Image 1: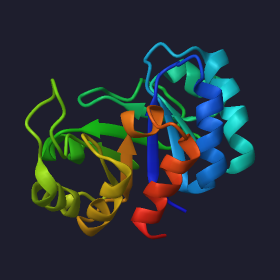
Image 2: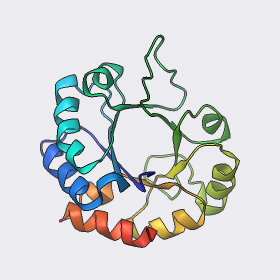
Image 3: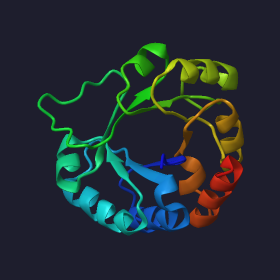
Length: 187
């Protein structure tokens, strides 16, 4: 099953508790991306262990953390896969902002920003997102200024799912936020 939600986080103090709550609410329909480039292998392993019983995949930016935790690797736009990195069936994803980035995607891509986000580039909008996602041969997740209710618009625009940071980390209840997004998606 392709996860419908890609929940992005850093090494927050309550990371394990929030990610476990999200996994409990969504199981394999949720994936967690530990975005902090210097995420330690120990933290990645603890997070992977907490998510595993729920079938929730973990993705990380650090190749060292990938090796220790058996997580997938997520690359920044323009980054290269580390030389000699053993794929071993692990997912490789990429953050993208345009068609050139999407052309470099491996297993999935995160395309942003769809909506306005302070301090980020000009938003794509749903029509541009749809055109770019349709031209990509891999699943594309929508990111940028989205809320759980935007899952329906993302699905209509051909997204594989929605990615998010603030909407799930700032929610009073992580489980409720995840359920709202999954309900809006319609699976």
